[in-house]
Structure formats: C-alpha cells, structure tokens
Image (cartoon, rainbow, N blue to C red; front, top):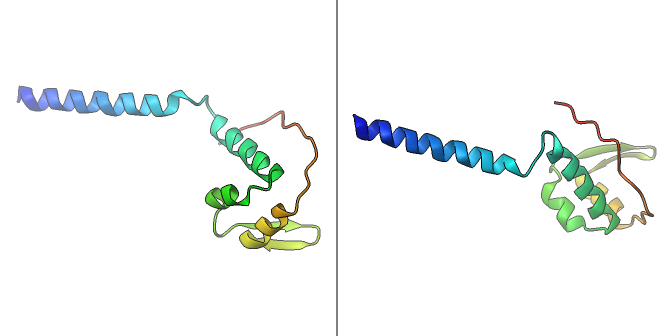
Length: 94
C-alpha cells in the first residue's frame, strides 16, 4: 500500500510540474496575442507556408469584394504589400 501511495504522489508531482512548466512561458491570455502577432508578421513577409500550417482547412473570410476560402486567402496574402504598422491595445477574453 505504501508503494502505490508513493507512486501516486510521484506521478501527481510530475504531472503538476509539467503543467506549470508548459504554462510558465505565458502570461494569462498571451497565447492569442502571440498568434495574432505571428500571423501579421507572416503576412508582412508573405510567408504563406507558415500561415498554412496554423490556418484551419475550413477557413473562410468576408471582404468587400466577396468571400474567400483558405486557398483564396493564402493567394491574397502572397500578393500583399504591407507597409509599417503597429499592433497595440489587445483585449483578451474567454
């Protein structure tokens, strides 16, 4: 009985340490901000290969000139010429 209790404590400690370590690099709500910043940086450099990795296959967008699916959006991004910009005043909600 003592061995199984000891094993449980060790496994629980490892799991708790893993969760704390995984979340240690992020403040509350910064994961979404980081993804938005990465997306805009990838758009600025027209890095559609990177965007393709994290954009949903079911992606849809609506623009003044109509709607686009993922492939059409990536094609649009390939031809963007973004100037200088600043991202600020993020509001994160759950």
